[in-house]
Amino acid sequence: MEATPTVRDQVRDYYGQTLQSNADLKTSACCTDEDLSPHHKAILADIADEVLARFYGCGSPLPPALDGCTVLDLGCGTGRDAFLAAKLAGPTGRVIGVDMTEEQLEVARRYEAEQAERFGFDTPNTSFRLGQIEDLAAAGVEDESVDVVISNCVINLSDDKQAVFEEIFRVLKPGGELYFADVFADRRIPVHVAADPVLYGECLGGALYAEDFRRMMEAVGCADHRVVTSRPLTIDDPTLAAKLGNVQFSSVTVRAFKLALLEDRCEDFGQVAYYEGTIPEHPHAFILDDHHVFETGRPMLVCGNSAAMVEETRYGQHFCVVGDRSVHYGLFDCAPAPAASEGEASGRCC
Image (cartoon, rainbow, N blue to C red; front, side):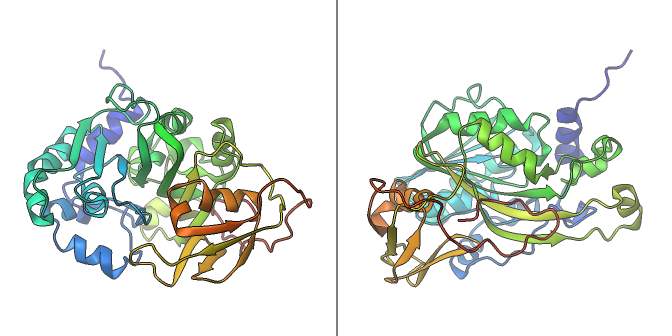
């Protein structure tokens, strides 16, 4: 009797055999229209056309200040984001790409030397590994060895998302950052939708329900994550839309940090943060999340969690934080984030 394909088998086949370029996608869920910065666009112009043609992503999850960092790209595919991160990390940085689809990794590996030359590097600073994002140890990613984890519309494809987040926080260094874009839903996905191989492959059948995501993050010790951007997704194919029913989807970019002192509410310690304008390509402002924009030189009252995010991470060299946690003033009185659209992943109020 022939074995029933697993979710991983279906995803591997969809991205290794069914999709030969992003033109083969049946929805826009895995095809971003998010604007890139001029700096990132200039780097993409130096990335091979074949790599770009087989890119399937729903956002642009490349945080600032990557110079010299070790970056891990989960579900790297043919390497678009990994190569972009490699240029941003520079010759002293390092980028590890992990993917379970050999056909895509073959493309990424084929262009490693060429991309290093295009970027002006003496040797490639990338390493592409066949593996499961639920078991990064098997791919040789050690404990607390990574500064930044990125992922672009891939975690939704996992059949064990809790294991993915456990692995992420295992490999992140203290103060390290998770910065990823993915598809979120306004409710748990119905069984018949999750069982449809096309809808799953199109990043809809495994979409993250925002509240379940929050619970998974809390389970790995991250009490506060932040939404950076969010945009609703539309399903134009009437047949697929009929199968999805009333489920609403959004493409959401989220950041989270491996910090021991984060609390599950915004607490007020009277702290003030100043952004010094020293991150390259961000001279005028630093965006922490969808409602924290630090203008250069302008003081901002922050809760204890926000203070930790900009002081106890690699961003600390670009910020001045006045005050500590020695005196507590109760809950931080901040305005909530703008009203969330259906399907948006909610972070904390501050």
